[in-house]
Image 1 (cartoon, rainbow, N blue to C red):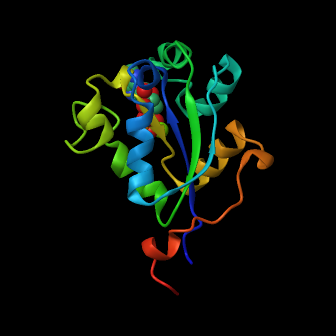
Image 2: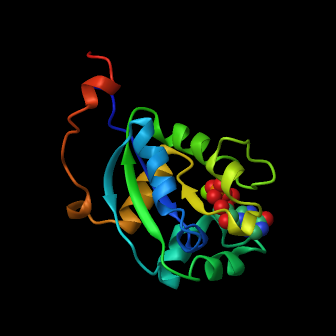
Length: 154
Ligand code: IDP
Ligand code: MG
């Protein structure tokens, strides 16, 4: 089965505070993706600076790191066929003013600085982000009983 791609998804502090954890997780579950790892934690400055290293030079960077520490976050690893791109499609455009209705950001938030969720933008960044937030031991190795109802045999 060709379903081994993984992505890093994280519910941001506003998503947690607004009671959206269940709704967000449901979207990925109901699609048919497989949850591989999840935790509930307060992110450190150091971890966030590494996670958002590519944006370090941007004017909004200090505010972004502050925003991400306003409360606990829910980092997760999800697995499935083409999940990096499909995950970004489910999440919607970075700025909720441009996110299509039907996407998480399009339906559930209003401003770019409070856009509730993170998703990796490529397979290499997914690998990097998974390694930053999780150890290998934290990634569960199991098969989902319903996989043959989600994926064609091959
Ligand atoms: P992404 O989360 O859709 O991948 P990135 O460009 O990687 O978007 O930016 C990371 C995060 O930084 C965004 O999700 C958002 O929280 C924040 N951000 C991006 N652009 C702005 C901005 O112009 N003002 C404030 N925050 C921003
Ligand atoms: Mg990004």
